[in-house]
Image (cartoon, rainbow, N blue to C red):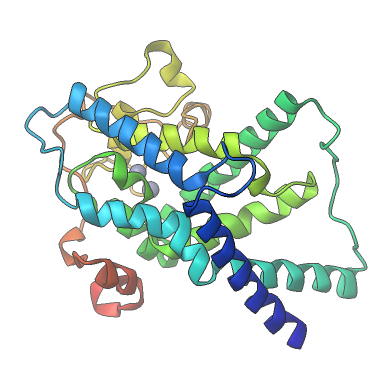
Length: 295
Ligand SMILES: [Zn+2]
Ligand SMILES: [Zn+2]
């Protein structure tokens, strides 16, 4: 037990130090700085919204702009600082100890991809993470317990880039836990792939941006603003458990028949049945899934 408590504490202080060096731009390599990349990409997509707004009447400081901006930094950094890093270190160790003590499995690696060419590793990693995330996202819509957490993301009423990272911290845990075993099986953790993650952040920001883009024929491959807005539509016809679950790739939705773009979605109402019950503060939204009266 003590070893887990030690790990928990170490995860905490390690991440605190790491984050502080990140702010001071002192981590190596200098070009893999999460904070400044996130800020730069956000400013870029926000600039595109200002330049070519889809809904011309929507303010650049749309409804919940600051709330969603806070979610962005919270989910990217603060959540790790206040515990996820520690919890995941403990979780991974517990899991590995359990595997070796109960099943005698010392090594999960089934396919060692570390010797592959960099582009092949990156592509494998990207496709695998995106595919697992697509299924996880479906699960968030299908299981009522998980949907209560995912509602926070769907409570956005006016769409803009920052809505991308507006989601309950529990989603971090759900996504990462489900990804862990398949990632361990190819011998990698998601933190090894800065460029893959930044690509996903860019696509995710664009999906939520006030931009009338679908990238032409690439729309069958890449998720895009015109498609993702229907994921947030209050009225999705007969689709009770959601449509357009794509994270970075739209291809999974076309492959599995969950795509739905009945018409131009520029001015549709966003949300879900019952969204008026969602509190409008950060604290309120984070507590909402635990409150029976709100679900
Ligand atoms: Zn969703
Ligand atoms: Zn979304």
